[in-house]
Image (cartoon, rainbow, N blue to C red; front, side, top):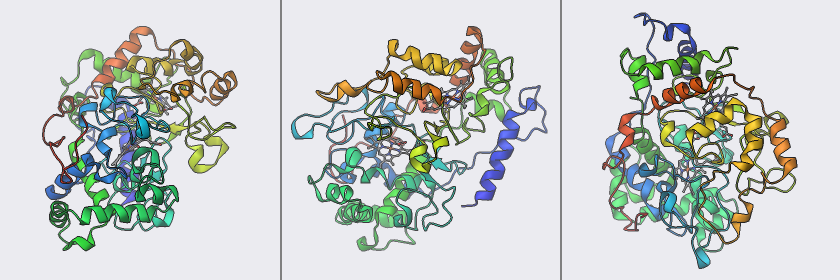
Length: 456
Ligand code: HEC
Ligand code: HEC
């Protein structure tokens, strides 16, 4: 991967999108930003499509990637916090399982959407950025990740590096030890063994073997050569192609169609990029073609769910600090892309806000909004016999709420109510109309090679 090219084009984009020229009468000399998507072969995309939705990749064969990233739920799951393996159902109808399948914990963070991540400009994934090509030079995979040197060298992109991890999480996909050999390997931290056991399942399925040979003609000629990393490459190829969403009214506008956006959307765009009367703008963080600087900021987002092990009692989530160990990163989370944002509720790293207006209003005065949250709880969480008492455990603890407030770095905005309406109009211009209907067989499957049932 040519990092220098990526950072140069990002810098140009930031300068261009941030510049006054972009919003003045259009000047034909203004460079139009170019999208830079990978173009994998169709066989690889077809393989990735079935792998995305096949429960064969989970220890107990009861959950797929698509359970939490489904075309029919805006490439997320519609919940504040996902229900991992053991639950059943899709989207907001998903339940927490019963009997021995009852989930042990909720997944601690919101499942982010997967739009546009096949563009080469994306270098950092997860809310805390723990998978990134930045700093990945010394690793065989080219990615800096929690797996360090264990991550194989044949991964084709940051998206492929990411796809190595969900299968290693007991709560998400592997299951609880000793339920199955994959769960046992995952619980002992033996990631290469998790990947090997999954590869063995794929090698034993003739339909998959044929698809892998077709997708990787230069690398695979027999079942023995199939590795889980090939599956990760194929899944990444599917995500890149199927969930590309770069033909919104905003894209059409920046490519030169003055009429693609409404008057209100253009007004909202000016406010978004130029800011309030003090020049304080959304684009300070939501910059570049995809409205993200891919950096980390603390904006006093409410913490819901059981947390991710941070803090004295372990039910907080310090975000970026969990990766860097640096006190200056406490409570910083990655700036999300705002593409298709109108389709992606609930919002924030723990899904605390269920409406787009609520999360935008949170930004106006983040600390006030944090304190007001207790009267304004919006989480979307399927009920659970014991875990429900933990949903608002952090927010019910005054010391923790004060702590979150103390780390806030987002200064208040002075936008009027009318201006906020216009900004929300602009955010809706970031929706690619093709993403409104993802029922086609480009996006979903009717069956998978393992014969395992799909989510319903
Ligand atoms: C149980 C739900 C669940 C399953 C199953 C799951 N994910 Fe996710 N996914 C999440 C959550 C939650 C996050 C964010 C975690 C974090 O940031 O700590 C995430 C993050 C991601 C991201 C990063 C997005 C970004 O913008 O940073 C991608 C890509 C992704 N998942 C793809 C996959 C793939 C591919 C699989 C299957 C191999 C998969 N997921 C399985 C819940 C799930
Ligand atoms: C200081 C940097 C910063 C500024 C300025 C900023 N944001 Fe954000 N924004 C973030 C971060 C970081 C998050 C995610 C926080 C989290 O998950 O804890 C976020 C989340 C969001 C989300 C939720 C997206 C999702 O998928 O969950 C929306 C919508 C949003 N911002 C819109 C705006 C708008 C509109 C403005 C201007 C009024 C703005 N932001 C200004 C950093 C910023």
